[in-house]
Length: 392
Picture 1: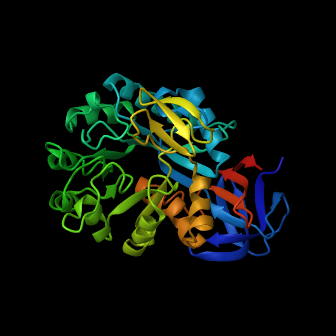
Picture 2: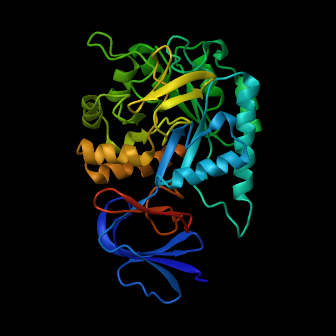
Picture 3: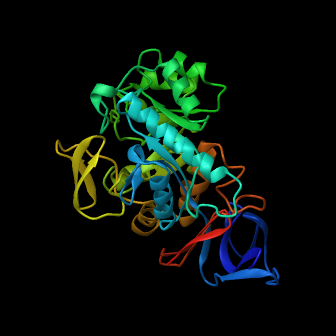
């Protein structure tokens, strides 16, 4: 049995900068060395000649996929979901908890925490899948008018005591919380938690430009799926989307599935925002990776048709794409430079989630979260924390 792995002769996206032909030595789940001419002795060799070697995708906003829904998943289902995601190039993700009856939300948080504890235990038999790196709370502190798929009857004003309960039940694993900035006491609410390392994201909101600008000054630093479930940009009313585009320091999520946002708007965002502050997400649901048909999401029936998930009332209900689909869209369909797409699917997400010191780039000392792709953007292999967890 080999103690080390060696990715040989790949076109490595080195240190989040540019492609260079190098070898990558993996030892104890970490990137131990990156250079040309590393000896094969004692190593399991992975030949990457002529292939791109990239950091694994990180999805900070997903509700599930492959037939699994975050809200109904215990350890066994979360393990299966993590296996599904590595087949799509994802090596780490934040499951997003939907607005629902409070006990259902609490159970989802508990289940995710239990799974995180399980995968973090020292063991020779690590679960071979994408790693859950925390929790994304997309509800319930949002706007009823811009609720999207979230059930109106379970939306409530921001509550310090409730979020404290969520934090406790999560084992301190809550990383992102979406709040409508115009909600009652929204600013004092986020100020209570400002030293807790939580990213507060403006989303599912009807905030106008003035309210949004104030919110960004007071601690909101991120925007949940820009343009979706919020007031649109108007030349006399730029709204929260306009305020986010104007500010270089605000990170924004984009769902680039060809359904949620017109490609022209994506190009506008790329011109307005620094690449380092754009994060590509899936917002995927249980039906991601599946075909047309009827499913259940957020307690309601929905149908999938031509790559679009909708409730019976016509409201779009998340996406049915995976991170590899998003990546292919950006590079292959819309001609965005691959170097920029790599950052928007890995490094930028890692920074928002507070894990860039461990993940998000191919850098010595970081976790060996690596994907190998051919020049046609086909995923050939996924390596998560040094384990080969998927081969095409």
